[in-house]
Length: 285
Image (tube, rainbow, N blue to C red):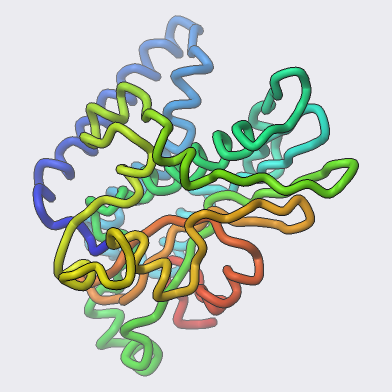
């Protein structure tokens, strides 16, 4: 979808107020020594959200390298490993939490549930289309890096949110992902914050032109259309022999003109779609 300009000021203020509220909540509970795990899970990427909001709405005066370094520090990659009887989530190689399976059996539902949570978390922490995340400032495009950026206005770049691996005794496949997105309810807080009730609604918002074609010839909504145009399968069957990535994707570097989406894709597809370009766009690669 295109950056959602409709209601931008309201959404921006909501994000800012949300950050302030979370700071107060965490500070108060820390003073009491009672930071609850559920609270921390809900804001596991609070520093990332704050960093993205401030740098996107700010002036980028910190420079490219400092910007990228701050993102690497505050927006770490998560690794999800589905083992035979239980899974585990790592934050920058540090164990974050366990993934329990009912009867110690990995099912379609559990795989889809975990990956759906990762893709929604990725979409939310990078602004869920409400802020123009990872645009390239004009002085970067017309200044020092002009020769690179002018040739790559419509470039697609990706930011890896999560890496997904399977470590099972025998090869297995897990299906039903898109239906899970359509059937599963978002938490009450997310529903109030976004207006969406289902996972799919949050990811595949129907913004209409100019986000995509008038007739949606390429798909039932803008999220699907972008996926079809870039040969991304929005209903993947997860093969335990393959590594997958949850990625935040931007196409077009110009402010207010980018297409922003989040998908789960295979390693080969990541190479094809992203072409080695990371977010923020790096003129030195």
